Length: 328
Image (cartoon, rainbow, N blue to C red; front, side, top):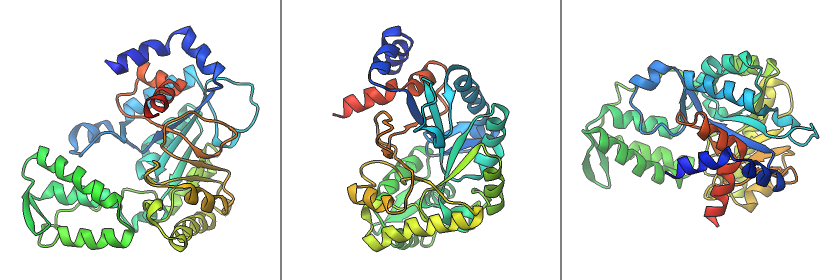
């Protein structure tokens, strides 16, 4: 019901007038994965929140190009004389960004920014959220706190996955590895699908050479930065930046905070990031873009259900404004 109300008001003239009055003229959209329609329909997942099918993604990009001005992140502080500006971003550096999203972005001449977790490059490392789901998916039970937990049904698998996500979120990388070893002890790991999930260094170079894609940092191992000591935080950022700059032979100017909420960064995090001379720092916090505040830019997530009215209200900035008001 709330979604329908928001969509209705998004199309009203006074809404656009209000957003113009509040100087809401640029909105950052956040994607993660763009998978084939076949994968979307046939593969089991704990959630679809961060996944868009290829056909829906094309509809979204076509709609955005027809109704908004999609600009590069490098132009956000320029006086372009445009209203209703959109910046498209992707987090993590999944291979499907190159295989499925990039051809569509090229087709519609649509710029975007992809933030890379450098330890995932060339599939050298896999994130805990993929590992734990694969373990849960192929097993009928799992061990936790010296108990054998039944996960034989899909509803139970999703429930235990969400439980573990909350646990992993508040752990450092070393703690995650130890915890993962404990809960997977004596479980079947032979059927895990270790297919290529992330971009290769060569893919990254091709994306950068296209001129449509800007590459940014998303740390080295995708940890909750709020948990880290100063030297750990510096290492996460510096390692990521150096790896990307070595591959692309250019300066990396943009950074995305892993997870992106206030539970995953602090003022200290922002102050450390400023020392690396990034031009922008994006989050997933609610709010509207202010070109005077480039360190902590809010973004709004886009999912498979965001088409037409829903996509319009998000891209216009109405959703972000409402979310910000409700959060107060």
